[in-house]
Amino acid sequence: MEKLRITGGRRLVGEVACSGAKNAVLPMMCAALLTREPVTLTHVPELQDVATLLSLLERMGVSVQRSGDTVTLCARTIDSPTAPYELVKAMRASILVLGPLVARAGEAVVSLPGGCAIGARPVDQHLKGLAAMGAEVRVEHGDIHACARRLRGARIVFDVVTVTGTENLLMAATLAEGVTVIENAAREPEVQDLARLLVAMGAEIDGIGSDTLVVRGVERLHGATYRVMSDRIEAGTYLCAVAITGGEVVLTDAPARALDAVIHKLREAGCSVEVGEDWLRLVAPRRLRAVDLRTAPYPGFPTDMQAQFMALDSVAMGSAVIRETIFENRFMHAVELQRLGANIHIDGATAVVTGVEGLQGATVMATDLRASAGLVIAGLVAEGETVIEQLHHLDRGYERLEAKLASLGAAVARVER
Image (tube, rainbow, N blue to C red; front, side, top):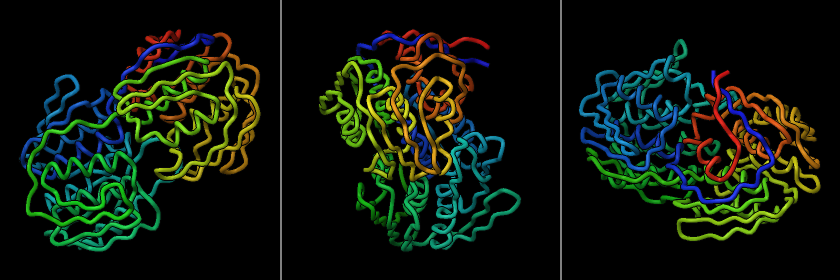
């Protein structure tokens, strides 16, 4: 097993290019199931989640070709509309094959998903939506079974905002008969990027970027070539990494317009942030100010940036209150930050963080993808050596993280246990 070793205390300075967005490319790869023609995606990051989903699609009969950051998928035939547990358990995003399979192949057997241990993320909204569109849906022995001769347009109102639920039903609706209206839809930039790919494939979608999507189903979709948006969570993570060290960075190929909530909080913490069309420049003070935050669906503060800001608050001036409203078990990184000397008090879905003068290096364990990023950020300022274990979480969502941090001057290396 590999681990990450960080020697803290270095000010990070330089320039970093943002990779393609994990949370955008995964549903886009699933969208290739909707057509017999090739779908080519560029700016695809090299991540474990991408590799896992490509393996799943190949198992279904999808042809996959990869060259650098370009992936071409062709689902000319779907040999097996099945997503087995051994592949699905590693990644929750595997549920995104459900809608496209039912819409294109008329049937799907998809194991209930796994992924990060950050709390219950039920798929009932996905199943409710497919049933409203005329699918016969049942759950047996841990598998979702769904079938329909052809889906029908319907009005779907989500009980809660769900990103993957919106994406699944949006894809399914493109081939449904008639008009589908999805209300209380997720507005995340990655959902918008998927919708734009579907439009490039011939789908008819109105309301992109709003909480109401109107989809007029078509008989068939065609192939397309599309560039995946840059990863706003990766970008935010590097901004936090530089900020905590009092450094300075320019992010190129950055999703600047998708980071308003994060940029607002960084400025509140005392950072200077310049925003261009596709770049960001951050200059941090010697010590940050503590900032309160409350996670919320987009355009609110992203839950995927909560751990990174908890690390910032742990060494900032003052105290901060962090409220997690999306997942009920997403403070597991707090215990690991406490091992580094952070002063954090947890009360249910609220964390009170009182900044300390400094952290001390120790061995810590990543409990989920974004928790691992928070620990990396804390390790950059901790005195001595910090060792982070369970790197498979980190590799799911960050492309060449140690190399990018090293290019900014961080003392970080991947080592064998």
